[in-house]
Structure formats: C-alpha cells, structure tokens
Length: 389
Image 1: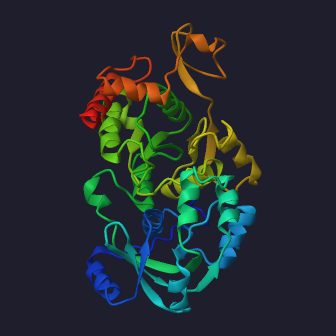
Image 2: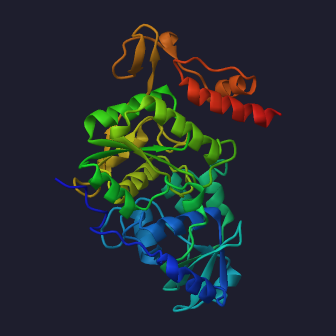
C-alpha cells in the first residue's frame, strides 16, 4: 500500500526555492500592486505550498462559476468553494489580460507573490454567499468578507515567494504537503486520519482523535493558524495547549502535529469538503468530521458537514470522512461516550457551554477534568485571566 494520491493526481506547488526569492521580490517591487485581504493572502500561501493542488492560481471565470453551480472545477474535478482575488471596478479598468501584478498582504504590506492575469470578471455577491455559506446574512463572518470585497475578480496563475514568517514562528511544526507525505512514509503509515481544529482540544476532541488512531495507521492533528474570527483563541495560545495535550495524553508513535496558514471561512459543509481535499494533498486517507464541523452560529444543521460527502461519487475525494457523533463525558457510563453509544440523558452528561467555560477561566477556575485535561485548562486559565487584567 501507499499514501493516497494528491487531488488531481499530483502536487502543484508554486512557491519558488528559497535562493530565488530575493530575485522575485525585486521583480514584484517594480510591478503594479493588488493589496490582498487576509483571506486572499492565506489562500495565496495555500496555493504556494501545494495544499490547494491542483490549483496554481486564483480561479478564472469558468472554474468559479462551475464551483458555485455544481461543486466541481470546469475540468470535472471536485472542488467546493471559490478561491478568488477581488479588486475594485476602478482597479479592474487599469488591468488587462497578460499583465503581471504584485500580490501584497494588505495588513502587513509584505510582498507575497506575482499573478499573471488570465481574465477578469464581475460576479454576484449574494449568489456566491448563498452557494458557499447557504446564507447571505451579514452576521455570518464569511458573508461579511465577501460583501466587503471588490466587485471584480482577477483570475490567473501565481508564483509565491513569501510565507509571512509562518515557517519561523512555528519552526518544526509548519509543513508543506510534500513534507508531511515524506513524514508519513518514513513512519510506515499508509492510512492517516486528519483532525481539523481551530480550538484547543478538550476531552471530546481527544476521544474523537483516538477513534481515528484506532482506524488508521496514524493520526495527523492539523490546527489552523491563519486568521480567525473575533473571540477565537489566538494561535499562539492554542499551540501551547496542543503541545501540552499531545505530550501527556497521546502515544507519540502514532500521532504527528503540524500547522497550516489558512483562514477559516466558517462555510460548514462546503468547508468540510475543502478540508478533506487539501488533507488528501497532505497525505491523509481519512478526516474526522464531527458535529457542526467548520460551522458558526446556527447556519448549518448539526451533521450537515457529514451528509454533504454523500453528494460526491466514490473516488472523487480520496480522503474519506470518519463520521462521528457528538462526544461527552457521561457520569453513568463513567467515561467518554457519544450520542450514538450512550443511552443516558443530558442530565448525566458533563457538557459546558463555551460562554460558561470562558467565564470560569476568567475567574481563575478550572472547568471539571471530565471536560478538559488539567495541563490544557491551566494554559487557558492563564490566557483568559490575562485578558481580564
């Protein structure tokens, strides 16, 4: 056996070798500039490292419309969400096919890449939001981003030459798909279960991860460290919590953790498909999909992110979902259980709302150990107390 093939058959990274990056930086500084939103920048980094293979740039009109209409690229390959670059109408008037433009991260002013323009096109923002997020409600963080961006999309291949310091900041834990594939092969893993997370792990996350470890040769914990919505715990704090959890409660022989720089879209079901596709590129044969995966608020039904996988034909997405129901500690079972396995009522479950947990942390109180591991809870208490101070 061997690892699953990348989506589309091969990895297509467009990040130039380190020794060539100063040359590309110098070239970019002489070109007209497109300033990218944080989401566009994170997509640029994902394309650069090959995580979004087979994409080699921002979507042209044909691919964009096909993705919105039927969750496939124009060539028939499964793809759930637009990966696009927006400019204003005024900017678009100065851009023509064949132009080379510098891609600059708007928040930092850092030059990230160069795009060769293949086309430009207008689009319907409401249609995109309803297709991607199943809503055009401006309270949805993904909808907010789309509605605030420019009215014209620029499509075309890119070359990238910066990773915004992620490789240094997360040294030893930041990896490209080609690198994780080498890692899994070196460990003799053929099947790998990915666990997506934007939060510190609590006991139910740990329980789901260990289901993945039993099913597959190894577990790949893959936290997102790109920009999150207001109120989410910063990546630096989560990173320390992940390390504490892994060091104390996972068998190191069967688990690896690396981070990646994408920004959450909070697109629920369609983001679950995107998560599976790029985990396939990282070498994963399976992905754990639990309750309300990649969701926000009440825009999606609890298991909609599991059900959407059934809309694809066998073999279209090689990274398959491990569908798990909500896990919790049951006082009568005297251990971790799920909605599927436990016969007892809600009154027997240790289940704490996110609001109540944050209140406990801010008061310096540890939530019960049935909810989370002591080492992790202590890190989070310190963080929340710092916010209060």
